[in-house]
Image (cartoon, rainbow over all chains, first blue to last red; front, top):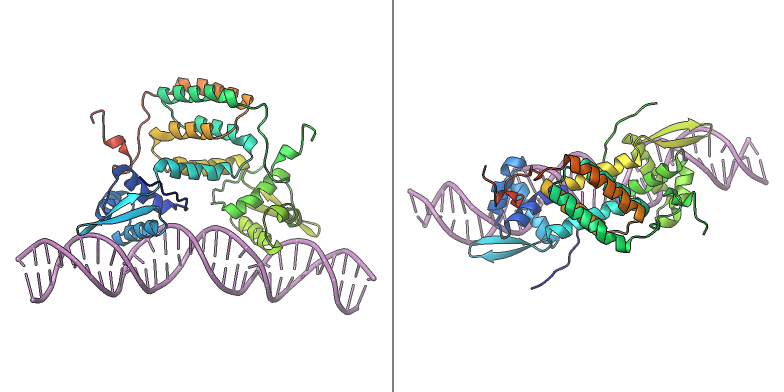
Length: 151
Length: 151
DNA sequence: GAGATAAGTTTACTATTGTAAACCATTCTT
DNA sequence: AAGAATGGTTTACAATAGTAAACTTATCTC
């Protein structure tokens, strides 16, 4: 067991490759190539480059097994997605997180189960909810500073 | 009134500038520079470059007013944030949207009002909820294909 | 009016990303 | 064993992004 912590930027192209690794676990470049062949109009060389870069960045791991190389991930999808979502939320005022989440929900199809689960999460969040989320923005980059509550 | 539709990529650095424009409306480069001076360790020239690129991309607009130039936005923050969030959700399986939203909620501080609002939205979403969100992923890039429901 | 300022435009230079050919080493294959 | 196929490594090359100096033009100031 080794939880290697890496948080490099995974680019769009690389992400396509990562999805294959996340779903298939131990893969060879050949498998990645064959899976992405239809979706992405990429030459094999392109995928090799991406695999190489991902290994270089520490996102993927290689181990030589017999004649082939097996690629495995060092960062789970959930974590990568989390890093990515953090990027968004770092671009907006914290006070605005609720609204953005609201828009996301509005814009996507959810299942009944999803909704129920989200309701449960919200229920739990009530225990930690605050009257007003505090803004961490730089003055001039968010309008929280314009109105409001003396300080 | 002119709703110019643009959807160019706004980079991290550019986003800093955009936040200033979004909050302050009609701004001069001078104002942007002064607001970002403390937060970003940037030379004035850097901000000028970013403003120039944003205008070039059509994200910002300039109008010369007397001796100065006034910058205004062509894309609202909400829209830009929406574009950005779409990027994430395009990177994951649709079936997974609910979970990701759940994680986001878990990871952020919300106000009581936020929670209530989200509950209302979820309530409304029930009318459009589905039994199972359908996966649009390429085979091999998501494990929905592995198990289940004959097809 | 001459130099100092301010503001926009050009040019610059490095790193990252998308995309891939070329190259090299190692196995199949016949 | 010689050539084909496989798989990784190097090199390549344009576009974007981060960062900024240099240049130009037009005011401000004394």
